[in-house]
Length: 256
Image 1 (tube, rainbow, N blue to C red):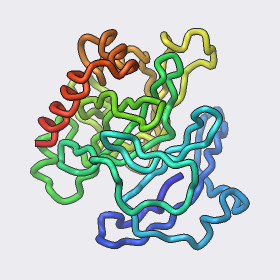
Image 2 (image 1 turned 60 degrees about the vertical axis):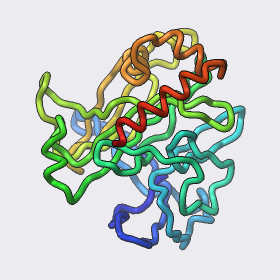
Image 3 (image 1 turned 30 degrees about the vertical axis):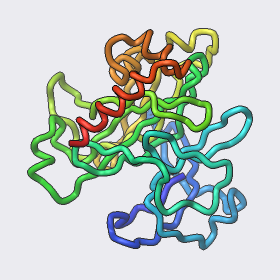
């Protein structure tokens, strides 16, 4: 569920949110996928609804049998059990990226049940300061970040990864435009989720699609850092105040 493509960086720009359906197809032995507008019967309250909001792409996930809507990413994931109204601003402290921009959600979060956490990909977009863009390792205008939150309210941030993009060659440049659009388990076998891979789908230059397959543990290590096991345990039990403090200090260092 995402806002219309448009000049969302304009002040007081009114967004119209739509629901899109992913249609996979095989044509001439080539697998393709496209988005189409979902029937109006799905969330009819969105018809003719516009709002001035800093929310971008809403994330949908089911927690304890309830469909939840992810609106903002910050030191907490802002969630609500109703679709409308959408808040204009977050109530939690937003996360800032390399460009100093708020991180906005990309995907429907992926619940990691054996950890009682969920994985999100967020992004920031720079369209003006070219000198900053050329200083990044990716040389492109979108930077992505993994984020992990607890599945219990108030959905505290566990960790955020460094910025990343996908390059076809080791130490090579990334595409000018990349936009992560999905996270999925590579297998439906619940018993081995802790050792399974995650498939990440992303768009390339607004005209092609790609995907990468990464082990869950690699993503956790990249996002959480060294000392993975005890950090996960501390985050799950809320017993380590130093862990939460260290996370905030790291966020402050990155934002600076």
